[in-house]
Image (cartoon, rainbow, N blue to C red; front, side, top):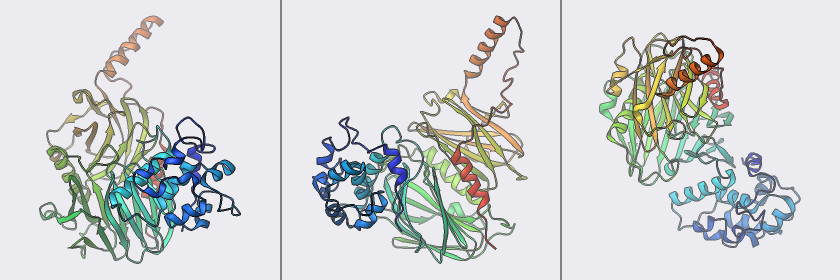
Length: 507
């Protein structure tokens, strides 16, 4: 089933445009393939092709392309791409990008990575400048394109294909047995697909999180992309009664497939699950799931968004995320939050029943609300970039829990040792930071992430204002910080939490 691209058209603005200041159809981009001919020579002279020729070249039925691009059903397919733009206001750039993202006939000279790069180039052209670092999916046909995560979903087959993270294809396909599709919701940085007795969640975030939740026995087959290797992590799994971890690598890329109990199920039970299994054979990983279990792919965070093959993880970062994957499987990580400055969405992934809200978001200051009915403490993580919080001086970075500065741990392991005081741990590299916070007990709490020195500056301003007005204010450190600022809740964060709590096992 091909879906409409009205949202893409809206982002382009009236008539699209080439972005070269020459107006729709007038730039050199029309004749040179909008930069897409660097990947595929079928885009050379694209503007002079007829619409029918272009569709034929890329194996897309003319009627599907007309419908997806919002063109009139009775449009003459013998019009050239330039004439289509002039008559109907759908830009040649948008048509070229559509062809790149939905091509059914791929040049034999293109490998999987080059195909993905071409499609990402097309996505960025449709999105327009200044929107490249945000987190959100844009759909074209069956494909969903994010800045971090890219995939295609076949509802009839219950199959995810062309799954890539950070510009690298990871899975050629992920097939779920007897999916029996019912509904979907793709909004902001999250995509959710509901089957009769299973659910699929994908997130456009630096971890490229993919979750498949089973409410009956299921078999999930991961077909690895070229260059991807899988290996069982026996040492990580040995202390876990009902979890299996598989390490996924590609060149310098690293992530984990983790099979574990679904702690968000209505009744996960206290007993360990039995019957979970993983088999690795050649380029396939076959996962056996049982009722109330999950298989999740989670990458160690990747930045910038594209072409990450040459990225190298530091030892501290690799170990931190190894531990986090293990503890997600044990149910001791409550949720993960990711923020990027050049986008309004926040990505929230819940692993246990926990609510996370972004109450306030400014440059160098984030206020989070965290709430849960869980009887025991949990760890949450926050991933930010240098544009969200100034990371040039890590010593200034400060985390506060209900107004009190949180003590910093020397190791990520300390956060999972329990205790009655909050702790935090930070790993910073490549212009990003991952912060883990241990919350010892739950009801409702406030976390503030900002830079040391900002509070003193605020206090100085308050003193100055008091002197001008002839009044005095107490100089108690941190006064007022314990009070929540007016809630500024991001739509995606709420949507993801609603999905986490609202999609339940069907009876």
